[in-house]
Image (cartoon, rainbow, N blue to C red; front, side, top):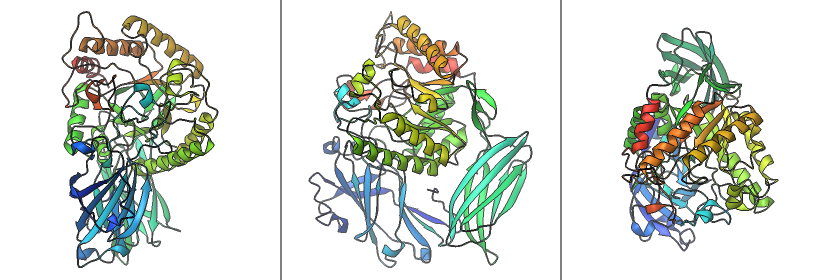
Length: 595
């Protein structure tokens, strides 16, 4: 899961650009040998969703084939060559020169295949990638299920989540070369000891036990420690006097370089930026570097016209600037892992991130086999996410699922508070909590709780209660005063039950930009601003509140529904093209002068 680097030893070649593409609605391509070449392709951009590049593909959620040719640089011979796909929704197979390189289940996370033995060095190589975008109940996230949110909203396509199920290759396809004996993995854990920073390095080596060095450089000097590998593993600890802790106002990054040495020469080198910081919970307080903080920010989406969910570097820069402008200090990667480039930006700009798996819309009503299948996928996704993002200082908390349908009878029964907790739900999430804490005991863990309050007796396993409340919108509709009164009582009862910090990580109102009303009415900009202000006031009066994440940062595409005007969820405080609504100015006034 190490991010591919270009340096004096390692090499990378980005294969992004125009590829050949062919939809396969009859699912005949594999039997027809399309991995040898596509019979009737058309051009398509990679990375990007296929749904908005061609009008006939908007609602196509089947099999799509991608093909590209490349030369392998001759100077790479003697190294191991890998093909890496940053994200393909929701499953993929890859062939190189007609030979199967590998396959991967699950979207939003990278995967790589060793293709050294499949390459030709004196002629073009053909890579073909099959992407399977079908929405099925056994996948994570699931789709086309009875009782899901898609059916509740009457949306098309019938996803089990309230955002558009964009399909395709969403992040770069990279060819990279690394030594046969190499640094395979790095894990960084940081602590603060008074004014000093402690950096603990765990390194894994493949192909031997070469000696190595870990060197940390930054403000104040350089610090180095030897890495003595045994059976491919080594550990070292570096003490940084008078360290600059990574934080909201000073997101300082040190540069850590690991090298392997062979006969006086550098056999491999890998460098990453690290932040020295700690995160913890003490009583009802969320602590960063030992000091209480409150999260101010948003749920977001990787969503923009035409490219859909595809990597958009200018948009990452734009959004970071708007988050700074509005005074936000955090966001959640709702409802899937965001790009590695987004995480790098958060490290540099000092945003705290609640890092979420793709487990949105989980359900438990289809029997033991279905539940077990999804649990296995959730475990895989948790492991892959932590492996990818474990060294980012911005990540303070793992979110293992969003709004699971944990009650019997589906989403509608859960929303109404009827029914009982499904007996499979608690052991399902207990296993995931245990896995996360085993893989990363240094960060906090949560589940983004169901909207309704009746099915959360098992959330004591969370370090921070992350709840969603839509008072005065989905409930107490149009009644701001009643909604806020109900919210205040709800929060007080939750705190009395759990005695844990609470964050409302979704709250908001759909708003049509440019629609106004006096007095404020639903769908107007005035109503959205008044609701958000009321929620912030209720939270500010309660010292146990650890944060507020508005839903949503910007309007985003959904399936078609009578509740989603123009196929958009319009709860953004910015429009989809990033123009501010009244609520954005309100939040800027409330947040801009406070950390």
